[in-house]
Image 1 (tube, rainbow, N blue to C red):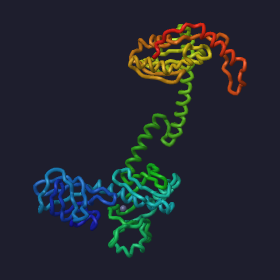
Image 2 (image 1 turned 90 degrees about the vertical axis):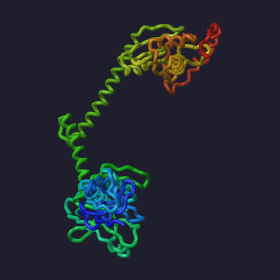
Image 3 (image 1 turned 90 degrees about the horizontal axis):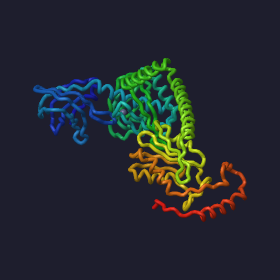
Image 4 (image 1 turned 45 degrees about the vertical axis):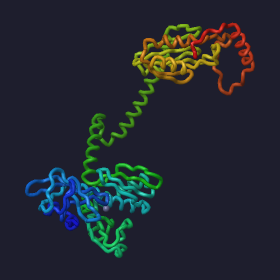
Length: 452
Ligand SMILES: [Zn+2]
């Protein structure tokens, strides 16, 4: 069993000891000031020095069965029986204690906001510590707990006391959480000059000697783990101070870029986002107008009776607006940089009967053509996009695919005005269309189709 010097004197960081056992890269000492990992607190690190060498202590752990405390070393190990001098890494220890005390104090602050906010679990392995609370604390409760703790640490000198008491006496201290420990129980108490306890916890960890030394305790965010359980992510002490200073420094640099004081940065960001949205909308409207002009002025080629416009674009952002600008009863093919391509048509079935087909599906046509070219793409029946590794052959390949259809104009239905929803069914047009279709199909000779 290793004598735990860290309990006898929490401020002692240098000590003399003798190596008891060696195992792998670990040594057990007869006494140590190195705190072993436990209770959510990381084990200490530091250095062991002996007559002929020294080695860094990377971590410390306790074997509960034997009571031995093992120190994991980097490099050569001193043999059993060697007298050593131990030196605990003071900065690392201090930050571990700030985290741990910050956790106790913040948990108590939440309990004072609402006793339903009880602790289910804690995490102190990293600078971002966690407190898992029951009772669904809302943002208003989070702010209340943070404020309560800030004011308590700033106005009251709470001093650490760590008595060990028999379990039968626990009720005299009313610890914040029920303890599973039996027999002698170590308590961690922060109390004011009038002996009034702010927080009492059964805990084997190491803590700062005064609660104010754990400050600031800052809540970074909350995360909902599940119904009834919320994770509060916080930082304490030097780590919280460094974090806040870094974030403030970054905010100040951004604010200088906007030529505003730091506290006006949020409103400047909101205004900038609104400006960005307005400019996006304006750019989209300009692209739509440009696309309409590009499509309108493109020459019309007739493919098997179908009016087709081919457009080459120098901006990928123009692809979709150009396809959307397709005119009634027409087809647009568009090719943009990088082989990005597309096809669109509009209401072909109102202007043409397609022999042997109910409808032309440009999504299916594009998909088939691009697949044959080694590209990929597809879309809906009236608009589709994709990418082709053979942009030079794109227009020809699509036109060839379209030539497999026979398009027959529907003369009496031009121009067609788009019916509005809710308009009564036009009894005259329905039978007329049926008659026309039969007559037209009857006049045509079937054409060989490329389609499978
Ligand atoms: Zn604790």
